[in-house]
Length: 306
Image (cartoon, rainbow, N blue to C red):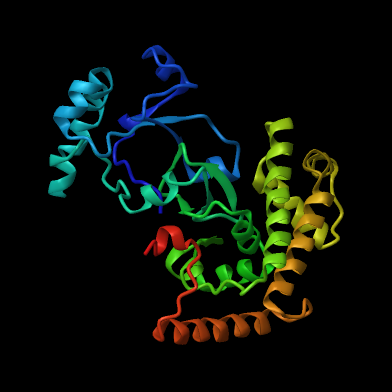
C-alpha cells in the first residue's frame, strides 16, 4: 500500500513547484511526482508532494527552508490535533511513510501498480520517481512477465474471489490477492513470450492515452467488456473504441491469457471454479515446498541476496 501523508499541505501543484523556483524536469529529491488511485484509472492529473522522509526536522529546515515553511504553516497545525503521539511529534514526515516499500520500488527503474479499489483490475507500470498514494498498491517488480501474469484472466479471477468489495467495486487486498497467488513455473521461452505481450499491453494503453488525453482506462475497459459480451456500441462508445483501438487491446489480452494458461500447463477452456481449485491446490503445493525450504523467489536479488 502506498503512502498516507496525513496533511493536504504536503501537496504541490505544478504551478506551485515552478513558483518556488524549481525546474519540473530537475526536481530535488524531496519533491516527488505523486499519483493517487484515480490518476491511474481515470484522467491523470499532474501533481507533486513534499517528502521529507529520512530527514530530521532540523535537517529539513536547514536544507529546504522554503519547503519546510510550507508544511510548517499548512501541515503542523493539522497534525497538532491528531490523537496519535507520533503524528503530532513527527509532523514533517508522513503518517505512513512506507519505509519497507520504498527500497523495493526505488531500486528498480519502474514498478507495477494497481488501484486498490476499482471496477476493473488493471496493472500498469509507473516510474520509480512516482510516489504512490495509499489508494494504490505498489508491487516491487519491474519485469513485464509479472505484469503479464497479473493481467491475465487467471490472476484477475483469483483477485476477484480473494479480495473484498467496497460497494460494487472490487478491492485488491495485497496480502491475499498478491501474496498468496501462486505464479506459474514457466519455462524461459514461456516467460519471454508473456514478457513480450506484457510490454505490448502496457505500451498500447499508454500510447493511446497519450494521443487522446481524455481517454481513461476505466472507459477503455468498459468498452472492452461490451465488446467481449458482443453488445452494441452507441456513438460515444464507438469513439472510445476507435481512440483506444479496443479490438487490438482485446487481442492482446486474449493472447496473454492463452500464454499464461500455457505457462501453467492448463487448458484454456477450464471453468472459473476449476481455475480457482487448481490455484488453491497449487498454493498448497507451494506452501509444502516452503515448509521444506524451497522458496520460489520472484525477485531473489532483493528478497534473498544471500
